[in-house]
Structure formats: C-alpha cells, structure tokens
Image 1 (tube, one colour):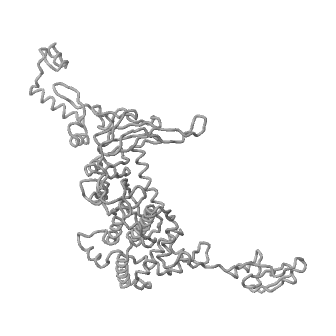
Image 2 (cartoon, rainbow, N blue to C red; image 1 turned 30 degrees about the vertical axis):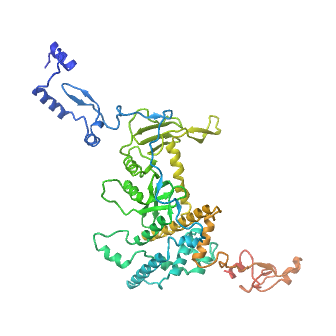
Image 3 (spheres, helix red, strand yellow; image 1 turned 180 degrees about the vertical axis):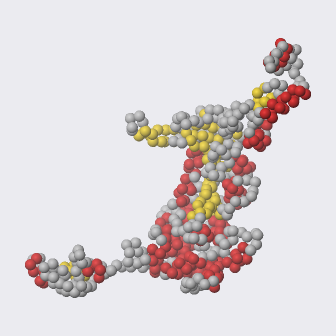
Length: 575
C-alpha cells in the first residue's frame, strides 16, 4: 500500500524535530514500533555485548541517529572498528618522558653475601648449596626408599649410602656435563673408541645406577601417608631439596638492579616439566624459582601468579627493574608491580587484554625498517618497532624514544651487503640487553640426561643450579679481589676432582699398551726376507714362503702373526 507524507511529517523525519524547533517525543505507538524493530534487527553479537559490559560505557561503539531513538551501528566485529575516540599511535619524532621511578633501595648490598676476603675452593662454594646437612637428609631418605623397593621384590645389590659416597655421586653427575656421551652406561664401557677411564675409578656402573634409581629427596614413608589425604602436595617428594637450595640461593647472594624472569623447561622421558625462574640479569644467578604443578583456580592468569610469587619485595627491596617475555607480560601485571615500586619491561602480544589495538597510524606490513610507533597510557608505554618483523614491547621504566640507533646488515639494490643505522625505541634496546643474561646462563646448564621420574630430573637440574651459582659466586669474589676468575670448564674440572676425592693432577689415567706390528726380518733384500723372517703364525699355525704370511710380530708381545687382507690374525689376536 502506498504511504503518503505531508510536509509536516517529512520535516519531522528529516530534522528529528518539529518545525517549531521542539524535540519530538515518542508516543506509545512509536515505542512499540521501535521495540519490534529492535527485536527483528540484532545489531550486536553476544560477544560484543559482554565486551561492552566488561569495558564500561567508554568502550561502547558510536551510534547513528534513527527515528526517535539511537540505533547501534552495524558491525561484524568490535575489534575491526578503529577507536576513533582514543589517541592514535605516535611516531618516533614525537617526544616522550619516562615516568618517575622509585629510588633503588635493596635490602642488602648487591653481590655475594660471603666473606670476600677469604679463600674459597670450588667444593667450598658448591657445599653452600649442597651442605652436609642437606646431603645427610638425601642419604637418609634414599636409604629408606631403597629398603622399600627391596621389600616389594626389586632385585639389585644395595648398601646404604653415606655422605662421602654421595658427594662422589654428585661429582660424577657434574662429570657427565664435562664429557658428553649418548648414554650413562657409555661412561663405563671399555675397549671402545669412546671409552673414558675416570668414572670406573670412582664408582662402579651398577652402584651409580642403583643410586640414581633410588634417589629420593623426600621422606618416602611420609609421602605415602600424605597421598591418602586431600591436602597432598605434588611437590612434597622434592620439596625438602628445593627449599634447601632456594634458601641457599637467596642467603649467599643479593641481586643487582636488573632482573629477568623466564620459563625453564625440565624435560623427562615421560613429560616436560616447567620451572619459573627469577635471575640476576647481569650474570644469570638463579635468585628464586618455583615448579609448575598444574592449573589452579585463581582470579589471575598462570603467568601473573608466577611473577607475583617470584617477586618478593620483603627480600629484594624496592626500585628493581624486571624484564620478561610475552608469556608473562600484561598491562595489569605491570601496573600492580609499579604499585609495589618495581619497574617492568617486556614483549607483549597484541591480543592481550588492555593492550592498544585498532588505533590510527599503526604499523603495517609495508612500513619501512626502523619505523617506530608508540602510545603512552599513564605510566605504561606501548612501543612497536619494525625490524625484519614487528617487535612489540611494553614498559613502565623507559621513555618511548630517546635517540638510540642500532646497526643492521641490509642488502642493497646491487646485491651488496652494507651496514646501516636504524632508530630503535629505548624499551627494545633495554629488553635485548638485559634478557641476554639469561642466554649467557644457559651455556652453563649441561646435565641433559633424562630419567623416567620427573623428580629425578628436577634433582639433576638442581645440581646444575648449585654448580652454576657456585661458579657465579667465584667470579663475583674474584672481581672483588681484582683477580682473574677461573674459566667455567676449569672450575668444573676442579669441582669434580674435589667431590670425587682425587686431585686434578693425580687423576688416574689408563695407559694404553702399544700393540704394533714390526718386521721380523731386518734385511732389505726381498729374496732373503721370506727365508730369514719366516715363522709359524701363533694363531693359525700356517706359514707360506710364497705369500710370506708371517714376516711380522707384535712389538710388545713378540708373537708372530699373519697380517694380510683375507686373514688378519694380528687384529683378531688382540681383540
């Protein structure tokens, strides 16, 4: 049916008010019509409505004016629309000012917390972490676990382990990081090209295997009792050792201003474990760590809880700077750390809640290398930098840009490589500098042999932590004395020798007996060589004048043996 409009009605629809300038009030019929229209046309998805409720009125989308009321603008996705009412990305030419940071006030003087004027051998420093009392506890629990295994019928020879023997066991574990072989049993194989002489002089293979199979940091009897309760701690089996090592890590060293948080993977044959670690960025010293045991029902994400457990202002102090990768970074975490007077910097993911998205003037795939974009929201600055790929960093410590440059090799039009300077944001340079200490530390961790039990692998990893922290203490003490520290390999050599009870200069070396073939006859005339040098082969009892089978004898055994292609009695005699 045709619908006719008079002039007055047309003006109402066009201006939204009557010709006299008064706003039009909706009648009851118009409200009903609008309700029917709203039911038929659902402009917002359920996810967008939840987002509006979560972010508040400021996050709602702009509206367009309809007949007597406001109607939401149609959009397929909330994030696809740019935030026109929010600040656009700034460029590297725009100045920025860093927020005021708290003064650096550590609880103790940073560095080694030992008498730096005293002399410490490698075993003295290692025993700060694996002390005699700690090893006594390990021996007691290991002996109980071995006795329990014998009761249930496991067949192997066992004798209770004592402190001195356990230190030798630890020395052999560190030795396996010095000399890398495919399998543990290869260290005791003889008469092969990969044979090594040292392990057999310290401990038999069966004894080493028995200790490794029965190592048990926790009390096995108490562990069985706790398993029957609802409050069972999954880490109880390893907790006595982790608590002891962690207490020593914090007692004998205080970190410097720059810290790094990262995830360390501890792989086993059954599964892969995870440890969250707080380390001194300057040298890689492990300050704090905790072992991931599974999902927990908390208000925050796993990464947020991990960082908050590692950062302890009561131990550290205030004014520290913490660097982390994008697994941990979130705006809420950084703001909460700032309230604790701890600065933070780290890479972030664009889809993280609270990070700016959909802003004008953002980086694109076509942006040139060295292009910088940044946004400051209070104490938080979000920085994007185009290198070979887009790099996103968030910080509560640094200004967005302060004129730093980096050098990069680029390929020019003629195919020649040249070094060029590119501007780089301050947070990116600081992140690369202070996370490098973590990479430096990884070269010291080398006990990679896997076992089928997760707690055994954590035990092996804690041995690595103790040996590495001991070496870092050695370097710190040497620096305070202004003397050159030992190389890491030399430190480990000395540590293994002292743990195993032998001097580094008196380690027994197996001398090989030289079995070399020499000519029986010394004459040079070929016609006389066969007659004068002929002997019966001691292995095959054959002699042949024509083929001259036995003109050779062993230098050390003085035994005549064949040495020909089709019958090499010399090689088979000494096998």
